Length: 292
Length: 253
Image 1 (cartoon, each protein chain N blue to C red):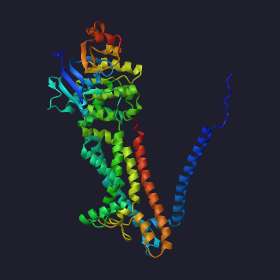
Image 2 (cartoon, rainbow over the protein chains, first blue to last red):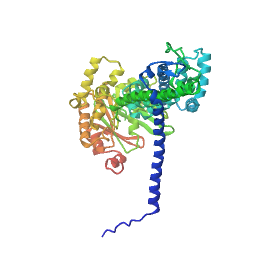
Image 3 (cartoon, each protein chain N blue to C red):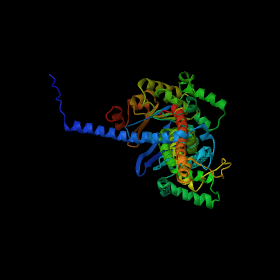
Image 4 (cartoon, rainbow over the protein chains, first blue to last red):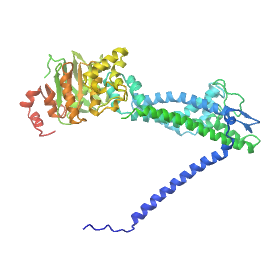
C-alpha cells in the first residue's frame, strides 16, 4: 500500500510562498512606476498633440505653435551621430576581436572604452564644446553636436559589436579560411553579416540614448529657438530634449509652456519608439534566415 | 616511411603547442587518388596532423611547427608560400557540418566568389560540385534557401560540395561522420569511394571499421607518433606493431 504523503505546513512552504509574493510585490512596484510614467506623459502632453503641433514651428515666444524644427533637429542629430559612431565602432570591434593580440595597447583601448561609457554626459558636452566648437571651429552646429553624441554612443556600439562578433561561431571563420579566404574576406563576407543583427540591437539602444540626451548638445548644437530648419550641418538646431529643458526653465509663461513640454516629451518617446521599431523589424528580417 | 612516388609527403613533422610537443617526427605519404585514413585513440594528434596539411594550425598562436609537408614538390611551410593558395588546393571538411548562414548556392559559390569568377561560370561549377557531392537532386529546386534548412547529413555533403568547388588536389576530412546518423554516414562513405577517382582523400576517423571499409592506406597514430603506416588490408590483417594490434582489437580506444 502506498502511504499518503502527510500534508503539513512547514517552514519551507511558508518561506517559498512568502518569496514568491515578495517577487510579485516588486513586479507590481516596477509596473506601477512604468504605468504612472506613461500616464503622466500622456495625460499632460496628450492635450497639446495635434497635426499643427508636429508640423509647425513655435510661435508667441513658445507659448503656442508646434515643435517641428525640434523634431527635425533631433532626427538629424540622431542619424548623423549614429552614421559617425556605427562604422567607427564596428571597425574598432573588428580590430579588437580579430587582429589585436592581447597586448597592453588593446588593454588600454578596452579600459578607455569602458571609462568612456561611464563618463557623465555633461562632460561630453564640455569636451564637444572645446574640441569641435572651439578648436575645430565648427561653431555651435548640427555637426559638432552629432560628433559629440557619436562619441557618447561609441562605447555602447563598440561593446555590443564586440560581443556580437564573439557570438559568431568560430566554425564560420574556420570554414571560410579553409576555403582560401583571407582574414579580411572572412570578416566582410561571413562574420560581419552573421554579427549584424546583434550589432543592430546595440545600435537601437544607442539611438534611444542619443535622441534623448540633452547635456552633450547643450553647448554644441542646440538652440533655444529657431524659425527655420537647419540648411546645412553647420547650422544650429532645435532638439526635442533641449526644447523640453528650455520650456521648463526659461520663458515667462509657465502655464502655457508646461503642457507643451509634456507634449514634446510624448513626441520624443514616440520618435524613439518608431526608430527602434524599424531597427527591430530589420533585425527580425535578417534573423529569420539565420539559425545556428 | 616517406615515399617519393607519392604526390604529398609529410617529412619529419614536429609540432608543439607552447612547450608541449604534440607531433613527434611524423613521416608518411599520401598517395594520389587514394583514400588514406588516420586512426588512433583520442588525443593522439591525428586531427592536429590533419590540420597541418592546410595550415589551419596557423590560427593557433601558440603552435609552432618544424619539418615539412610537400605538395607536388612544394613545401607548404615554405615562407614564400601563399597560405590562401594552399587552402584552395587542399580542401577541408570538418567534424561538425559548418555551412555558412547563406543560401545553398552561395555556400558552394563562396570559394569561387572570393576569386571573382564570372557569374555564369560559378553557376556551372556550383551545379557540378553539388552533383559531385551527390546532393544536387535534393537541392536543385531550392538553391536559394538557407543551408540550415538541410539535414545534418545533407549539410555535410554540402560542405563537401563547397570544398569540391575549389577544384582541390586533396580533401581533408576530419571525422566527417561522427556527428551523423548511420544512414548519412553510409552515404558519405560511399561518396568518398566515388570521389577518389577525382581527388585524393585524407580522412581522420575514430571509427576503425570505417577506415577498414573505405581506405586504401591507413596510418595508426599513438601519442603523437606515426606508429605504423601501411596498406589498409595489410595493417588490418597483419599489423606489425603490438600497439597497432591492440588498438585494432579494441584493447584501448
